Image 1 (cartoon, helix red, strand yellow):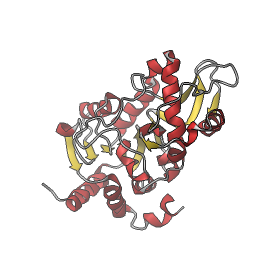
Image 2 (cartoon, rainbow, N blue to C red):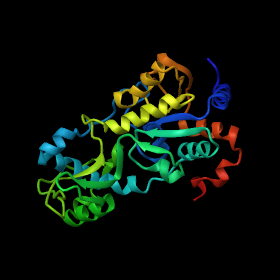
Image 3 (tube, rainbow, N blue to C red):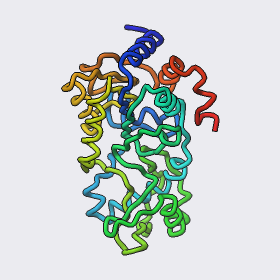
Length: 288
C-alpha cells in the first residue's frame, strides 16, 4: 500500500493534469470543527436515527423532538469554525484547481473558509422557513424564541450530534414549546433536506453538469453510503470522469476509485494545498 505522503504526491500530480476538478464533501470535513460525523470508519450509522421529513411535517410530536434537540445543539454548532480541511479547499479553489464544490454538509463552513463555488446539496441550517407562507428567518432568531419559551430546558446537559442538534441527557418535558411562524402560524422547518426527502432536481442536474465538465471528481470526508452523494460517483464513472477520494475508512465507491488517500481530511488537504500554494495558511480563515 502506498504511504500517505506518496498518495498526496500522486494526487497532486493528478490534479495538475486534470484541473479543474469538482469536489464532493461530507461530514468528515467538519469533524475537526467539533461537529460529529454520522458514520464510523466502516460506514455504519452511529447513534440515534435522524429525523425524517415526512414525519416532521406530519407529527407535532416529531417536531417537538427535533426542536428540543436543536435548542441544545445549535449554540455549539453555530460557533463552529472552519478547520484546515475547509481552508485548504478554499486555497485550492483560489489556485484554480477546483471549479465546483458540492457539499452534503449543512454547516456553511466552506463558505466561511472562503470557498465561493459552493453548492449545498442538502441546504443550510442557518435559515428556517415556514412551510405554509414561505417566510424565511434566521436560525439565530428561532433560537432566541426557543430559549425564551423554554428557559429551563435550554440549559439541560446534552452531547453534540450531527446536523446542529444534540442528544439530551434528560427527558424532554411534555410542555416543551415549539416555535411556529410569526406570520401565519404555520410549521417552521430548517432549510435542509431531511432524510427521506428528495434533493431539488435542479440542484441535482446542476451538480451532474459540474461532474461531466470536471477533469475528476474528488470525494472528501464522505463514506458515500447515501445515494444523494453516491449518485455523482456513478455519474462520473458513466461519463469517463475519474473518481478520487480522501477518506478514513470504507466508502461505497471504493471499487470505482482511481486513487484513494486513507488519511484525515485536514492533514491530507493541508499537504495537498501546500503543493500549489505553500503559504496558503497565512492567508486563510485559520488566522481569522
